[in-house]
Image 1 (tube, rainbow over the protein chains, first blue to last red):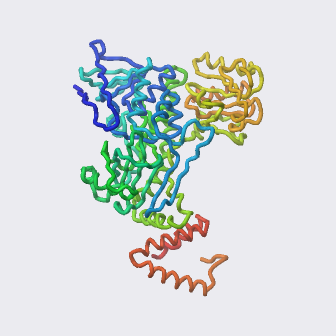
Image 2 (cartoon, each protein chain N blue to C red):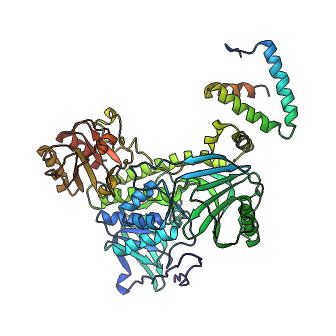
Image 3 (cartoon, rainbow over the protein chains, first blue to last red):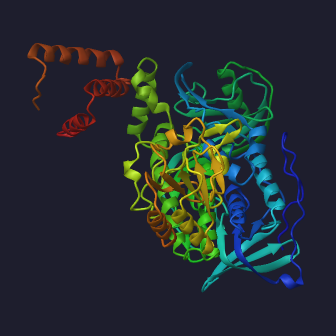
Length: 563
Length: 63
């Protein structure tokens, strides 16, 4: 019998709400569902919400009765906010979170590098927003509870999975006993230690790095702006790195590397934590300042991925699929992109719009993204925690040179999480005009946002299905194009036609964006009327044309749906 | 290895002496760090990552 604790987790700033467990009745011994999602972290919850948006019902199993212990993921990128906007929780995050775009690297008391992330006038969201993961999960859970197509089950622990033919089975334990879920598809969003990944005997590929880091959340009143702070080789922790981030509610994340040879258990001793945090606060100019510990944990830097996220009827997403270094905020931010991608691919399969083979594309694209992240993260990880004497020497030489030499300072800049461009996706239309454009997002790229007016941005209008942006000044969409749109819709494909550039509503389009100042046309590299972009449900571009006709549109849609 | 803008013999002798003196000034403990800093400065002045890689291979020979 699974008995999750009904005691609220301890926290000095977050009021944990303990939810009632979902209990199976007699008739629930075996339940059939189209999709079961194991895990109610960022990837599982966003997958459920995106599936629901595509009209697909799912059950989400949450082992515990409350959201996660400790702040965990605290930095969310602009692209994550754009994805969270799609599932309706971005506004709550913006209201509670702390926006920022500057990062500072310090060495020997000198600021040796300042990272400035661009904040373009065309973006709705800041480059980065800090908020504790508990709030994020709370908002996502609230959205799930409010959605009739999501069945979020607190206190339901998945104890085993198996597959038979085209079905997956999850054994579930609850405070009222066990039951079995029979699902067409099972999403393994069960986190970095993924019991499902272990049960299937799947091996992660990549590198694990030496060295452990402590993460500690403290409540302290520091009169500092919300900017990332990095300290290299501080006197109190020679050779190692310390990071600090501001979080809402007067909380600061202090993140420091352990001296070689020290165990995580030793590092988490209260007296060790106290001495080191005191030393760090003293070093930045606040000796003896009062602070209170909220939560602490230890992690090691790993850059690993499964080589395939689809295993029969079991689909992996988020940390269950890959373990990525914390530098560059790549954990949850990658999980959102996985979830958004998985949900539309899976929804198209569940709804019979595409063959199950479409899911191989999810795996290809997201494994490709993980490998790109691993490659990039490897560079920053080798700088943050040098793996060999040679890397150590180079890092130390760069620190020393950086006090006077400008040219080495960009090496401090570890690239932060950014959306992967699916440049080589098989879904990209082979016969379009991609190569002829001189501006705008290319095939496979994430969309660029465009400010259309006061509190009105392009991405507010995109997503949930395929979007055809058709640039026209005419009163109506061309009839042959509309025929293709209607024919595709008749197959159940969610496709919206959005007209851009006409002053009044264009006949045949679901929506007309006037684009009065021509910003959208300019930023999307559209020289004349008759051009078009086709965007996937995850808003990535899959075709663009300088001149679109019915034949070319049909070809692109057939290509996408036959993948 | 010969290059178009190779050092003259007097200049090479100056480099020889000044590098030796700088190594002594850095001291045995810091000599490695000093040499890596120097290599990075020279690589930046060289402005040619491929040529730098050639130099790495040459310097690794006959150790």
